[in-house]
Image (cartoon, rainbow, N blue to C red; front, side, top):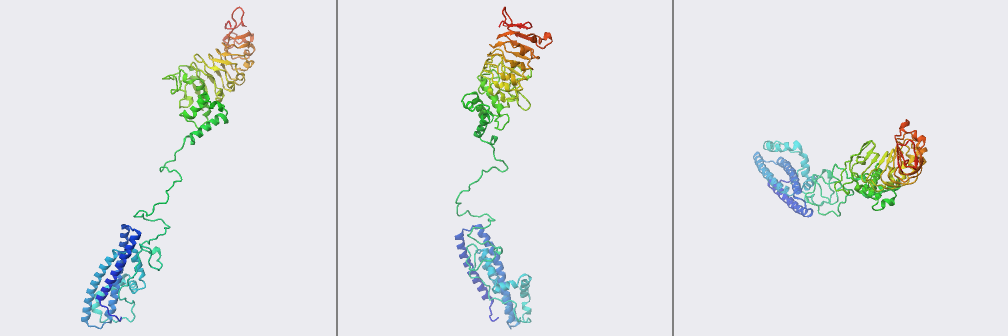
Length: 550
């Protein structure tokens, strides 16, 4: 009240103050940019925010000025002419002050930051400018401004001065001498305000507890200290990790199959499998390394496929006339078109060791569950020996490898006697040696055809022959078997139709009980040939269909 400021002084002070603020901000902003490498994009955002806050500060300046003008006009005792003059002067000064304020504010806002405007605005709450700003919020400020312009010239003389002013005017807007800038560490010693109320984020050198919402406009200043290491292999989205066949590597599969064949089931001695070039070794190596069917160790047909592979290699399959493996056959273009058809079905099929299931190979027939029941490789240049593992095909009913030019050698494995379903064993016209296994007579009680002629079998005919009550066809001729003619045993076989026991070293006679089996006597026996020829027959016979000289 005691100081009379004219508008020129206020305007000059305001402009000077804003210039000081601009210089300070420019200096601080330069330091901030040099120390923190703030991107141009972020800096433009900060400058835009500061500009908005400078507009608010300008409104506060004009509000403070109008309040001061009100008290100044009320306390003067000048005449109407002086009031009119003062009003005109006020109008001009107000316009000049506004223009100057806009210019100064515009320049200042172009280089300031949102953090400094926020702190400057909030930091001046204790000053008269801040109080004046609060007192003039909303419509009250607008009304005060309009009232000063429209009615100041008419009502100045009639208004009574207020005894207690509601707001103490300031001489000029309060400007903080040390505005803080959020782009550098806080300079002010006073604690910062609540982070949630800040209009601009403060720069912190400590790691943030929360991830940045927006990506950094500039690359990281420090490279990563160590590369990122993936703990598990990554796979394309929506895909499954790749799996190995049988869920194991080849070495594990190989060892497991070997254990199944040699340890768990004792199919073949391990030494035999490990003997390079042996049929067991060739069959095993084919199964684990060459067979495209690639059975897993837990496949129920793993042993069956091994045994059938061993039959091929042990029977010199690569030399077969028909259906040998094309990749190793001695024939440049091996065919597989068997002409012969057994009484129980066709023998046609694929080459052996084909990638298909073994039941689809030629000469083989199976049950519905793919268990082999028939192996019939006749007249096909089969050589080598018979496999001991035949009883690992427990459902075999028919096993035939007869006829020229087959030339099997060796003995008849006793394991044929472990086949309870065996009905036909036909191994004639080969080079088999040794004796006829007793086991055949004991276990293969369902045997219907036992055809072992034209070999080199030795020994005698077992009295157990009489236990084969289902026997229909019996031929041992062409073997140097010795002993007594088995009349008693034959008499126990009522289903016999063919008996060929000639060209042998047997002696004795055909009993009347055997002759009673002849079809001429109401029986089924329609062919009976023994060594009953010549002047001194080895075997005497009155009912034989034909006699040989022995």
